[in-house]
Image (tube, rainbow, N blue to C red; front, side):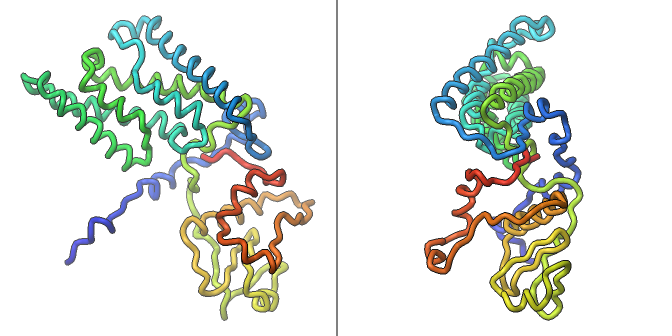
Length: 327
């Protein structure tokens, strides 16, 4: 039996983990609480860079001052003699207040990824500490801590750049080394406090987070009802078979099915997008009326190179459909 090539081997834990992750239900909470958690009934608000910089300044200061205050004045934490601040949380503040649109700023990455990095760092540092000559090996231990943390975050889809510093500190900073396994709790607490401040500050005029777990579907999944329009295709509801066959350049989405032309290839992301639209149709108000959002004439069609290029314009237009915070 031939072994697969290394470049062909791929494992995505989300293919299995997302099946048991509950669906986002934030929209069902009271409106003030839902807004605080990032839910918006309309499109995502856009603000200029002056406001972004101002909110980032305030957010970074408040986020870090809350963490340092808890570290300094908590009797429980003071017993283990923590550092004034875990330096990597400063880098985390830039992600969570400046570039809040980045997937790296989501709670999964900011909290889970940073904590996993701390676990990896402490674990590797403890192994090196078994040597009597540990101090002379810190130049090796630090990089290895970062490398292991990077591997763990990649395999769990929780990549968080400040996590590299979190892991390195476990081996190279004497104050952090003295914390031992308590360092993991210190990092977790700091990450949660930072994210809590980010929810308050970023949702005043912006929207944060864009999703809580992943932009992909979570929960038990049904096989998408994507059919190929051919000899066995059947169009339910108001789309008849004659209408479909007479208009081959058409994709029909109903609440029950998705029909695409035969031999029209769909990638995984495109299939997920069509399936998401089909699910949204199920919740449409029965008193709805059709609204024409975009039409491309034959003369203009040659100017459109990719449907993906139109997505940002549609998302930012005044006719953007209701946007829910992803999981």
